Image (cartoon, rainbow, N blue to C red; front, side, top):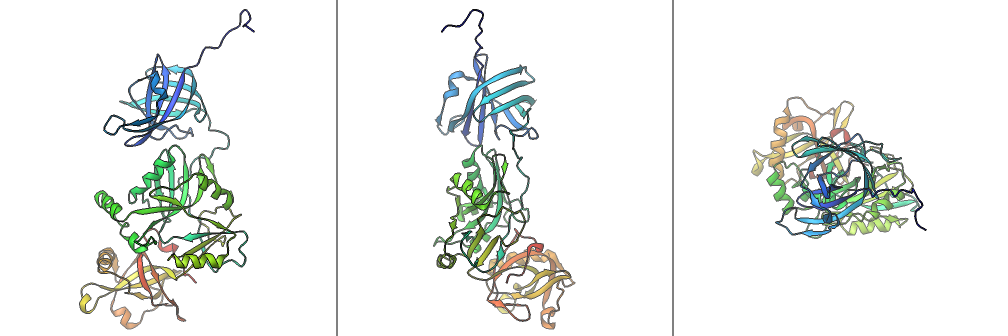
Length: 459
């Protein structure tokens, strides 16, 4: 049936396209159809979802309308070299277009809302979301404390528990937004520059925003995690040294939890729900992987398999438990194949014989209400490089007074150089003696990801 007299056909709204562009730096090309061309801006972090967060928009050259259909590879060496794909497209309502302000309402599949662009300096503009975010939207938190595991035996019953490998590395919460990553350790140290491999995870997730929980690990020639190897990647600040050591000792981020995804905080969801969302992301690349999770498996068999693989142990997690930031309440349990203990360094002794003039042993403690409880010393497991690095680290911290609240023997005190108790390390040991000292401790390495207040005595 034809249109009746006086009927009006709504004019076609202009179109827009957003292309995800994996060039030298990941960005999104935001293009608005206007006056016969695609007026374009490069968005390094994509569209802002939250009116409280503006994003940079770099004004680029206009493109012909046909370019809005382009997907494919631009050869390396050419301008914009890299892979281009269409992230979203649709049409828009134009509210205002001047040299100082472009105001539009987007109607796309992913991009929907009222936005304004305005210049700040030169080619740099800002894009701002004017309307509220979608219902149920949670802004990405600046920091989420990692949930902690309690040292224990296996659960009495396997039902309702999931088992994961206990990775022998450095715990890190990784925040991904607009293809960029930020990695924080348990003591809020930003290790993003230390581990440039994490950029690959940001590239993989693209426009998705997420907060991920996992462990940074290094593997040896047999494919087993090596905390000693990981030590070579810590304490490095020079960009050139970081790049060289990343080539020599690559690190993998082993993911095991997801606490925020695309505008939704997940801490109140059960382990099973979070785990399903994590696995749906398919996070398995050259520098990152999702650790396996075994539901209702036979705990002793899982422990035996972990021991055979040379793993430190396993983590048991209650499948119906939420994620409790910063809490250690028994809903996560760590079952170790060998005993390790985090320690605070309270001093050192001089080396003897061939090691005269070097560091002989470290004096170790565990925090108590009055200071440090002395738990023994360790000289085994220290390489000559370790001894040099520890002396350079501890020398500026030396002081006359003992940091230990418990007494040392006369000989121990006479040979000691005391330090401010701020350096945390880790040892492997045989057992605790009846007087509260470590038997047969062996040095494993420094723990710059831990504060002295994090150190607790392991059973």
